[in-house]
Structure formats: structure tokens, C-alpha cells
Amino acid sequence: MLRQGSKFTAQATGPAGGTYLYMAPECILMFEEASFQTDMWSLGATYLEILTGSAPWMVKKQRELAALMATKTPPHALSHLSDKNSFLGGLVSYDPDSRPSASDVVKFLKSGLDLTSRYGYKW
Image: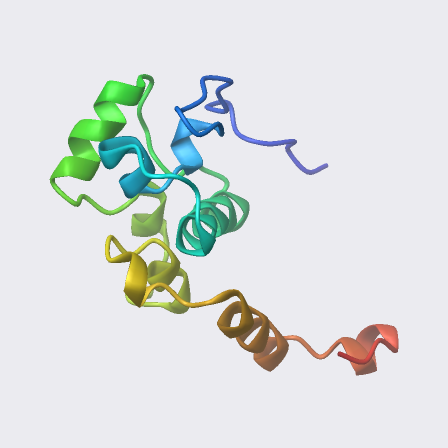
């Protein structure tokens, strides 16, 4: 049976809304509004939890997360992956302009998924 989420999910939200464990550093540290780049960070944090079974950050309070982000510490869950410089690592890059776009994510997923032979679905 699959576990339904991590034990670290929190309901605290930031100034722009959202669960802080999945919020981009620019939203937490500089109170920037959500953007396509912040969405990619959140997607990366979500994928990290899905793939590792661990919350992206092992913190209990938003101020602990802010302190880690201020020093550009990578998400803790990233250490569970064998390739730290993977595509997933790019999603949680501290430089918003270097994060992949949504189109890049789709291309990456398409390159690794053969849905046609498995499910008869064509991208």
C-alpha cells in the first residue's frame, strides 16, 4: 500500500499562499509573487517527495527553512537521489532563470516515458 503523503506536510502558508515546504526561496526570502519559475521550484519539491518518500526539507518551522534557503542549502530530499545534478536538481535551482520551463519538463518526461506501448496513449 502506498503511503499518502509525508508526515511533514504542513498547513502553514506564506504571504502569497502555499505550503512553505514547497515554496521557492524568492517567495520565502524576498516575498516575491508566484511566477512560472516559482511554480517549477514547487513542482521540483513535489517530485522530490514523490520519488524519495521524504519531505523536501526536514524542518518544522518556516524560519528554519528560511535560514537554510538564505545559505542556498539544497533541499534535504535531494541527497537521497544518486544524481544530484539531475534534471530534478535543476527544478530546485536557487537561480530562477536557470530552472527548466514547463515545456522542458514535458519534454523530459516524454523522453523517459513510453506511454504508447504501455497504455496506448500518444503524447
